[in-house]
Length: 330
Image (cartoon, rainbow, N blue to C red):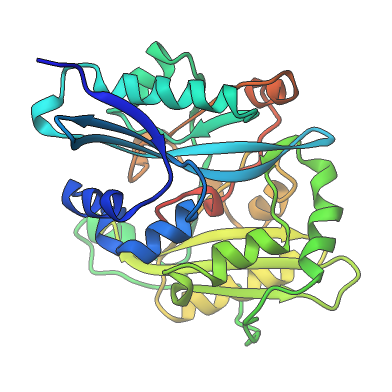
């Protein structure tokens, strides 16, 4: 049997149809969601074809990243699919290597992502990614119900003293966001640039924009932002702390939002934050605790593969900033 032909391509109607047929979650969201995630013109896909039919796809989201005192270009590996009849033939690895070669040719500084248990051996083994281990889960328990149900106990009462200050959500990202990033970024070694353009695109321009709530201290000389998303998942009513970043006002924003969510019946709040992140101590002071690996709802690995000397800090400990805004699925 002839080997599949691999090419690097932008999004197209053919790829959108292949996504829908693949069973990948993003494919069920439609063409608009794909265009929002990947862009219309960028070469974001490695595509495998056999006898003219798409049999494999790897998708990469383009982003700007801070690399120490520099700003570089990166791609986040997010989606991989190989047709059942082609599995076990090395197609997944060939797709990844083809895009890796494209990234080097095009001057991309960094490839990174969150492989699951199935993909991790290939990324960290065959493809040589640096393994940062699992993402840094934190948890804040707002009500007892989530864990009491698992123990068969009919109990549900609040565990937080935080109170809702009835903050009005913002409906757009203003110039204050650029100031927020300017003031915060010196304490971040490596991470996706969280300026006005990024925050608008991620929180207000996407297909899930109506599911996010954003509050901000926008008029402060040291602005702050807190973004959340509530959902029913993992057997309870949970929330994701999508972002909490900024100056001294950030703690008050966060405590108010925690109080609001507790009053609405949210039972637990999940967050991502490393101990060296600029928001970590505020999260711990508001009751967030590191979640032991055995209690985590899902295992998500984190890896990076620098392609230029400028991106070498990406493989070093104590450099990365992550939050749920970096997740492509929440």
